[in-house]
View 1: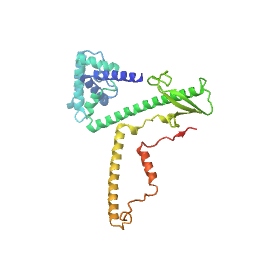
View 2: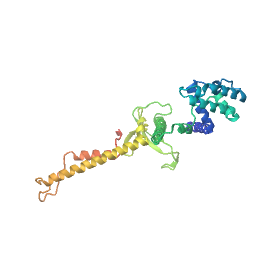
View 3: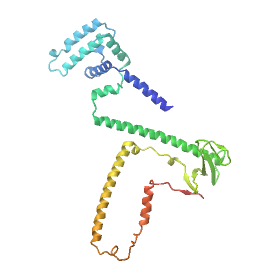
View 4: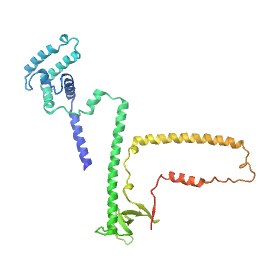
Length: 318
């Protein structure tokens, strides 16, 4: 439902932004420029010193009077005199045009919008390629992080539901805690299937163990995997696509440098052994190599890391 409301809001926003025309953008620019030079809340009408209900004849008369005051020949040395005089002509032209005046009156009564559309700002600020790419990276990474957050909250709710189902099956409807371990079967949902007796089961059944307030998944080998909030994957800005890409590239570069260093050391070691006494490989009839102490532990540790990193501690069934 929230996603639907968000989509609806964006649709309304896009419709409103698309409604701004080129003439509207011209009005936006004039309003901003006049308020910057003549004072905040200065409107076209107040600048010409006429009411908003003034006729076209009154607007022309006010324009001629104001143009004499702002003419550059009478304001030599005044900063922005030419810009103010040119701006006055554009304002008078808008107010003397019925369609443009009607459009300005709409913004005069309802206020100029704060957000004027991406096209408006892009045409005026002209961001470079780097700025656009940076904005897109931040936008997409932020949206990805938002999706991670939503999935994390959903997973937390799902984990809590599973824990409640397991405790209800172990403790009964009154949810009175029972000492010791209780083995139960919990329906995790999914497609219907038949059990060993031919009965239809409405979803995937999983063996679980409840001990106190803790809930575990019972594996076929008897090991217990805890079901708690750590089961859900917390959102992380490091797992967004851009930072993830940078991290993988950095790891690849470090791995290549380590491989080059290792090859160099191996070559140096080979040269030293060629010039050595030959006590190991030169010994006739030997054909064996004595392993270094502790080598098996290092290999096991490396295999564990290759298998997927850190694993949570397994709790054996009592």
